[in-house]
Length: 214
Image (tube, rainbow, N blue to C red; front, side, top):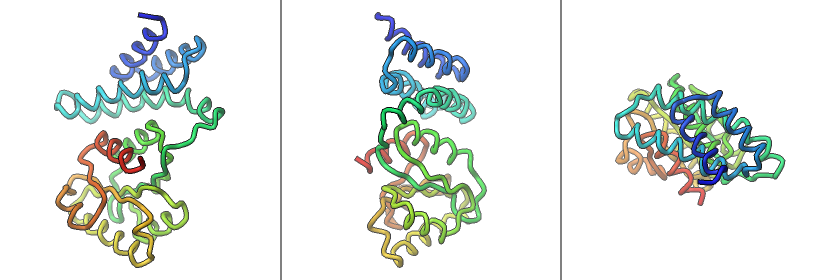
């Protein structure tokens, strides 16, 4: 195995273990040794998070483990971001994301934001408790490819179709793909409100977003 492959493998292993400082150090070393930044992302950081995703789907790790691994990935991305900027690394697409009005949950949303950015998407994060008008204004202002809305409470779930309705009234609905997520949301609900997709976990959200922008 050549040296660069060993370096990439070491980064992946450190990420899976959630060793943020080690991921940062190993990423810096790989860059210094001439390993391409895009290669580090595609062959070290991304495979690490994909492995974490598989473990999470198999119920062998907890959401806390996913968050720790995500912070490790973010440490690596922090090193790569300036290099991507210097090379005018263009984003694959633009996403506006937020948790709907009345809902203050943000752990899952923040994780998705981190993963979206890691996957090469530009993200405008509106935060939590986002009013319908704020979503509409953001779509009108930023012209995103995707609007991602999260609702973690059954009582806040109706805010999603309300927002879609407002987008239709402002003639903006056809300009953006809409994906939804959160505990009470389902695929059937997404189809009923004519959303473009539903993601049951952060990894499916990333896969879905990449499919929609491509």
